[in-house]
Image 1 (cartoon, helix red, strand yellow):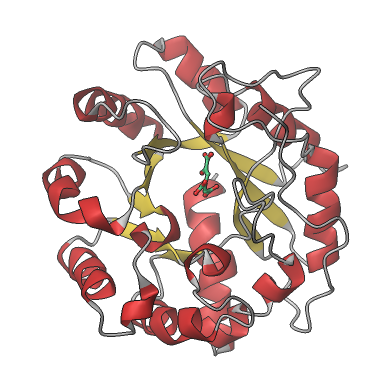
Image 2 (image 1 turned 90 degrees about the vertical axis):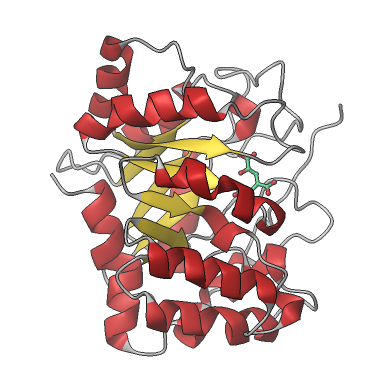
Length: 294
Ligand code: 0GY
């Protein structure tokens, strides 16, 4: 497998400045491979995207904190994610990154506690067939029940075509659930399209379900400046202001054919969250509640 590079080295400076304390709540680290090898089951083999590169991007874009989500290429070995969190500590000892892990169903209680101490605050269940071989719902539910007492939440990644069949599974999860990239609706259907309408119905019926309003670069048909994404997603931010998170998704796994400019992604933010109050909830209040409640 040849290694893929999926980010730009010198993204533009966004025209819009995030408010002080803003959290980029969906990023990954890859490797470095010499220290943290990739899973034998990985479906892609990225170049190293290190914590140091992540923090340089954070500062360049004007963010204060990150949430590092364990990427599928590292399987259930969360060492690279934990390393990223540990390296984020400021001189005051405060973790400027927290994380979401992917865990083996057989994980011990003591290993879960060690993840908590390392800054993990959630687990991710990935249903994308191009990323994982198996998505065992019964085992995921066992994990969800075990992490609930730690105060963690569940992050779920799926595409719109399986939303309907996932509902009983989602309803059995006893924690807050955060859906990645809005469950990947087909936004070419427009703001009243079937996919986004079904997704809003899910949120309307389940107050414990949140969403990341991220993925403009993945969901937009024409690409920058992502007008189609803004038209469909701004009503979601306005309707669920207390249940939305946002992230760049750097280093943009699998986007080698349409690598986004992170500065342009940040400039989508004031268009989907047009008031200072919506911006504060999306970028500070909501992620702080989930990841830094201590
Ligand atoms: C994302 C999206 C993708 C990849 C992963 O864990 C992963 O490998 O999440 C994707 O390829 O759509 O959110 O990073």
